[in-house]
Length: 111
Length: 113
Image (cartoon, rainbow over all chains, first blue to last red; front, side, top):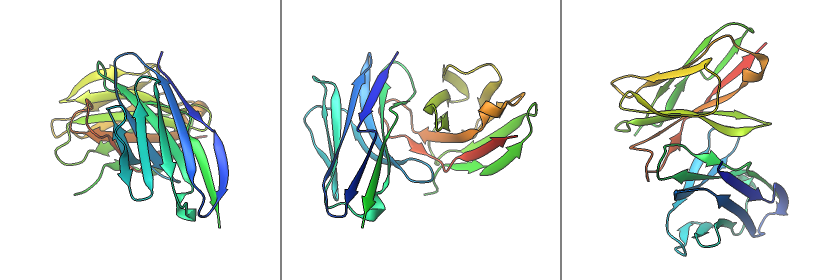
């Protein structure tokens, strides 16, 4: 059974703070790890990571994967209230066609 | 380019009824998968279709079924609805789930009363 564990479950920060979200996984035949942002609607794709040590960046968001230690982190710098959302981590395997999700981290950014 | 389109967006059904949800993937995408999202269980995989074939199925009872048409559009059906089926049903599409980014639709909110 795949295991995807996100931490913390929730956090509250103030605008301008930096946030670091963690996702650890145990999955056989790992293929990729994906990060999504979910507000009160569908998850929005952020990053897909397949290789260790290569940071992906998009504006104030960045993410990196460690395939040896089986985890990924998502960083958000200079947070804004619009960053308030649930951040979901999911993994895929090379021998099937599904996303296995973690429970998500709820980020609340206060003005 | 249009995104993943799901219909209906909101619906209310009575226990024992059945429901059909529809999903049109992004143009050119041939893989469509379905997920159920509830506060208690999070996002759970239902099934995945590629070229009209179901390639993967999650751990849901047989009341949950789906299909994909030749134009890649997909439907899922839930028969004999139970209160616990109340959830957000999300459809996702990709060129092929292997190694490709998976994009989600807005979802269909189902309430069973």
